[in-house]
Image 1 (cartoon, rainbow, N blue to C red):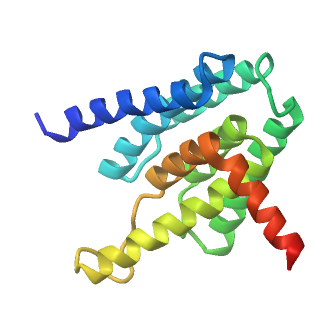
Image 2: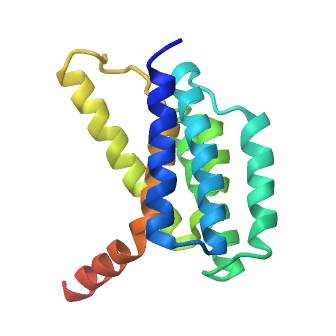
Length: 182
């Protein structure tokens, strides 16, 4: 057994505690730990196999959509529009980059949109892209990645969505004030 798995288990427990401390025991907490669990599983799979399997992504997305009928602090339309814009943005990137990303990433952004809502879906995409680019550059500098090598994007999407869900509102507010002032 790899040391990787116990580390993931401990980190998952820590993440659940952080989520509880940030949110408290409210209905959105259960959405958050469900989504975090899905992101953790998919990140490991994507890291090891460069795949985001439909057998996990699609039922999880459907379950989250159904939960959003009952738990929607941002308004139900925010989650629907977030899912659509997330999917369509990644789908457009796939088409225009001629395969620079996988279709699993687009489907995962459906899930992200139902998780974080419209404005935070865009923020998640920006943050995931920045983190992915930063790690790619670091791995190239360290000699662990060739110039045209592929890196799995799912872990960056998952990490970004979790961070944005827990801490994104203050960042979005700060950024909007920054834009308005300039």
